[in-house]
Length: 479
Image 1 (cartoon, rainbow, N blue to C red):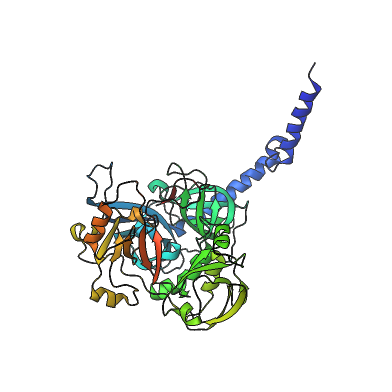
Image 2: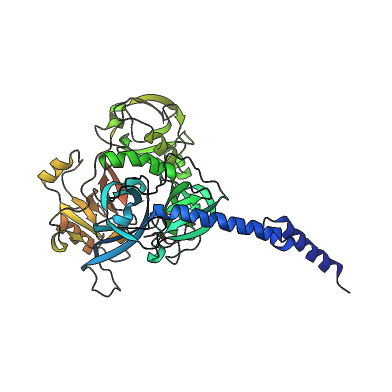
């Protein structure tokens, strides 16, 4: 005789099955037809989306590291592979900036509608939005299917989605999953937010589209969080609205001229509030103010807590970043700060962002410019360089011309256009002084580099941790 409790458990399990969305597979033959209809819809979707998606193959240079076939520090040719998608009939397409970083040649492989073979085109880099890891390319075609960026589509947690691209170089691949989360930040001080998905994303998917079941663009697949370097179910895509905002500026001028307030923001933490005896419990701390910049002219001081911009409450850096995108350079805005126990209303006139230095200048050599420890090419500041850059706070240091290889793009805390002033508190006046200072620091020892970016000083720790112990040890961009 069966145990009554066992019968109840089995009955309960059967009831659970028939109450789930997939229960029809067990409960009624008609549900198989429902699955077949769903399969037919995803097939139809792939036929529609496929011609809008491209494979991108790049040729560039990199510096070999320890453990590779070549001795470490050797400048060698490198081939990269990523994905992209059309946003206009005239051949404009988006990919990630790290896919084409330092590329000397860009090939775009297109699969025309109804065809199985790929057609190769030469890709031209139109512009880069480094803040959001976006790059706009152009190929010479008359008319191609494309994603309409004005078509509104917002990701919802639990929504079923598909990711398209060229994982591991396998073009025209599609994977299926769901939206795991929206508005995902990697760190509290990162102004960007991502769509998190468990649709399998691997190296080669970078720059490909994430779409909903209606074929509408939700975002651009950008990176994965992984312990192994491959898919572990945590993929991140930049949202569609970020691409839409960047498109016009990149197409017209090759850059996104976001207005700047001339301040260095920092998210409030319990330690900062207690240690600095701040009265504000929410907002953004002003760490530094650019001399003669917009914030300085408005009367903003280091230690102020920014709590509102144009009447909209600011709780964190992400909200500040979004509010800044709505400002117009040269048009006055209202800034509310808390200074001590008092709220102050300031008038601030944002200024255009300063253009970054060229990614890689002609004549750069490994011997004269490579700083292997930091993975960058640098140039000693001269009066001519300082004059050309304009507005540098200090006239000594090393200008970062570019990263030593596409694999470092987006992962190196130092970026092209930065100026290195100090290493562990020791001032550096040129490339040789920088190399000497780095050589005196043992591998594994603390390394703190002071950089100037956009006129603001900050400290970075190449190879250090982010302080987010709950995050996986490896956050990888997918190529």
